[in-house]
Structures are given as C-alpha cells and as structure tokens.
Length: 339
Image (tube, rainbow, N blue to C red):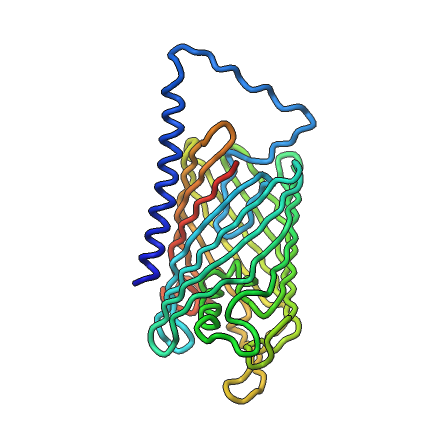
C-alpha cells in the first residue's frame, strides 16, 4: 500500500540519519591521538540550571519534561474498525520542535500529516492537522521536576468548514482514533486552548511522570453541515509514564493515557439537521503504549533517542476487547533529537 511504502521510506531515512551521526562520532573519537588529554569542561555555575535530563525516560504520549531544544518526528501505523465495521488503517506523522528560550522557558510547535487507507464504503484520504503553538515552564523541586504547559491550535487544517472535503474529513475522524493524545489538532473546525501540568520523579535511571491536561474547544468555522455543532467543548486528560534505564543506552517504558469529555458533544444527524448527543461509549478513551528506546550521545550535549512502541486502544471491555475495535492498535516509531 502507498501509505506503508511512504512510512517505510521515512523510517529508513531516519535510521540512516542516526547511523551517519554515530559514524561521525566514531570518526571524531578515532582521530584523537593516543594518550592525548582532553580537558574537562568547566562545571556550570550555580546560576545555571540543567535543561536536559540524560537519564530521563521520554514518554510516548505525554509531554517531555525538558525546556531544552529538541526536534522530534514520530510515525504510527494504526489499525481499527470504523463505525460501519470496515477495516481502517491510519498513518499519522507528527513533527514537533522545542526551542529553549531561557533555562526555565521553551517554545513549542507541532505539525501533523495523516494518510488514511479506508476500504469499503469509506474513502482514502490525506489531511493536514491544525498546527499547535505553545510554551513550557520547567522547574526542579528537589528530587522532582514540575512543568507547566500552555498552547493553542490554529484552525487552518484541511477537512473543515461548511463544505469540507469528504476524504479529509474521514481522515480527521480516523486520526482521532489513531492518535487520541493529539485529538485537539484533528478537530479542525475548532481552536483549542490547552493547559496542563506534569510532575516527574527522575533518579537512579527510573522515571515516573504524571500529567494533567484540560482542553477548551471553541468553534471557529463549520456549521452543522461541517460536522461541528457545539460552540464550545471541554475535555480533560490524565496520563502516567513509567520508564527504566538498563545501562546507559537502553531503556524500556510504558504510558497510560486517559481522556474524557467534560461536556456532552453533539454531532449533526445524518441528512436530518438534528443534533445527536455522544453516547456514553464515546465519552472517554484509554490508550496504552509500551516499548524500548535507545540513547546515543551526539557531540558534547546532544542525544538521539529512537524508540518503537506497541500502542493499544482500550474500550470499556478492557483487555477482553478484540484487537480491532473503534480504538486503534498499532506501532509507533519515535525519533527525538535533543541538543
């Protein structure tokens, strides 16, 4: 399939970049004369605050606990069944970047592109999600670390408006099922205000991180015919990440992410113009991700931390639900570069 070919090429390109970085590092080390003495860098002054945590386990779905500069790309291939029982395959690719402004503050931007392979009655399509712009404030608290986050989405994504492109609209719906942690970006008719807080314990190679997020949706475009009937929608999410380093270059970790509507969203009735309130089954979603991650030093301060995780959506039947449900089952390839 075209989607899998594109994803495979992306993965090979990213892995080749990692290999090139490792080779360059090895060449630099080998070029140093035997027995040469390399002067150690001067320790940071007491006024400086570390912005990167080398033994910090990066989450799969939660926000990273760092104000250091970072570029990140991840692609997930998610498989699920749509509302008509058709097998659907969505491949969202997310580009994220953080830029350190001060030792405490960093800016953030996130972009998402999705390809959707929807056989049966549904339509294949691609979409560009609403971009997200935000900022993070990070502060150590003894053995803990606190981060506050604020962001907004910009409602310019494809598949929205009064007369949306059907292929793009179907892809946006599939994207929410495939990547619920970034659902605000795929609600393209809405501007979403996002506020959150994270608290993490990082010590002895172990990371435990908790997260709380509240999202306020404000409809900017699209009437009933555009699939958005509520002027306002409110959603909350909580997350937990646990990670452990085995040696210096390998870690294993898992995320649990739960989100729930605090309001009762409504959608237009098919061909009637009437509003239909979400059923209780659509009011919440739970996603689990687990997998290994590798850690490679680049230069004096940089790190490449590629990883792959298995992602499983859970409905109210829990682990007894079949693998193909309204929530996704898939694999995520994540490659962050911290510098």
